Length: 158
Image (tube, rainbow, N blue to C red; front, side, top):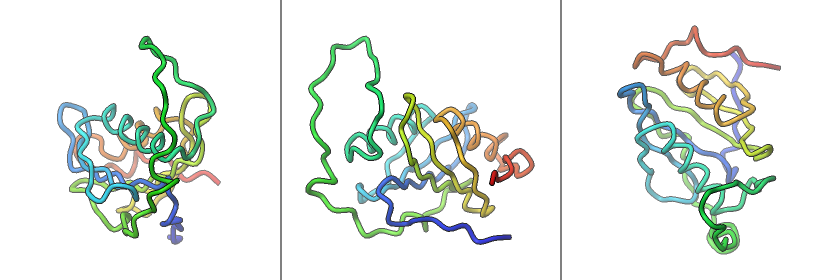
């Protein structure tokens, strides 16, 4: 099996530590280079929201579209971290979830969604995703039924 290479200093790198599945929802901890402690997530929606907030805070990767909302447009602050707060020197990729661990690098935010790659750390397998929904389906396929199921994990695309 080939060795998967990850740019561990990338600001857009997150480590998703899935500690379990309850009622069909993954829960666990989210690590990134801008928070000293992990942030807990209770569902896939909560996980996506927290990753999106982190990317908005550092303004990287930049959004290609403005998200629509029923709320009036808020005055947006500039990036909070990249222009004054440096990246923490942490090895977030070494943290492990109780059930599964995914190292995710979001490379683009185009067409109102995300594109990038995800590594299933325990299986040393990497796949590319074209949307946040596809990312959640990939993670769900690896944690289906409360146990990682390697047979449902998509094959690596070249």
